[in-house]
Length: 111
Ligand SMILES: [Zn+2]
Image 1 (cartoon, protein in one colour):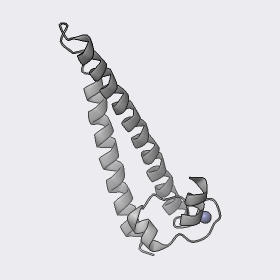
Image 2 (image 1 turned 180 degrees about the vertical axis):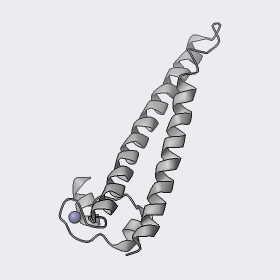
Image 3 (image 1 turned 90 degrees about the vertical axis):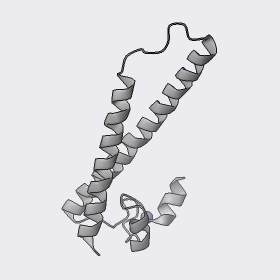
C-alpha cells in the first residue's frame, strides 16, 4: 500500500478543511452586520443561512476529526484496517475516501 500517497492526500484534505473553516469563522465574526432597515423576511433568510453554515461547519469538524484519526493510524501502523472489525479496507475505497475508518460492510451497518 502506498502510505505516502494517502498521507499526502490526507494532509492536503486537512489543509483544505482548516482553510475553509477559518474562512467561515471569519465570515461569522464579521459582526452582526445586516441592514438595520432589513425586512423581517430577509432577517429570517439570514438566520437560515447561518444555521446552514453551522451545519456545514459541524460537518467539516467531523471530517477533520476523521482525517486526523487517519493520519494518526498512519503513524501507528494501523492505517488501512477497519477500526470496527479489523479487516483490511480495500485500496479502492481508501483512494476514494482516504480518511475512511471502516470497511464497506461496517460502514453500511453503521448507517
Ligand atoms: Zn469492518
